[in-house]
Length: 126
Image (cartoon, rainbow, N blue to C red; front, side):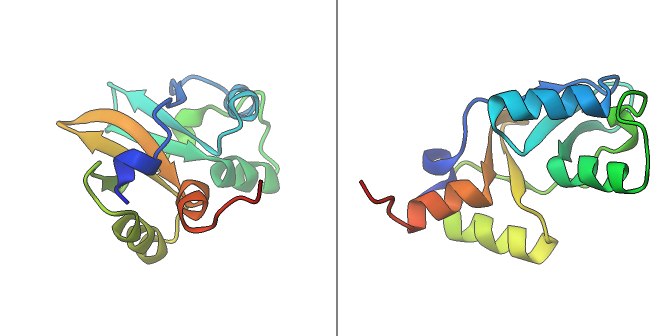
């Protein structure tokens, strides 16, 4: 199976000025564990994950004043939609993360998560 068949095509995007609370609320509403952050004034495309928010809260930072810009992961590993899900899983294991942004021609096509891959490998009982 290929990444484009398993990925979530609806991608949550937030701005660098969103607070951590706003990002967490949007992620919770959408039932996703990450959001793509586009910051044209910085390194371009990044990602913020539930783990980034959890780490900030664990350090005692205020989710109402901390902005996503200060917690973005910039060294994102991108997947191609034509990768196999095994290749995506290998990239996640190598990098120690649970989400890959899927790019095609420098355009965000989706996000694939560990959960998406598991759904392909493990049948859900009816």
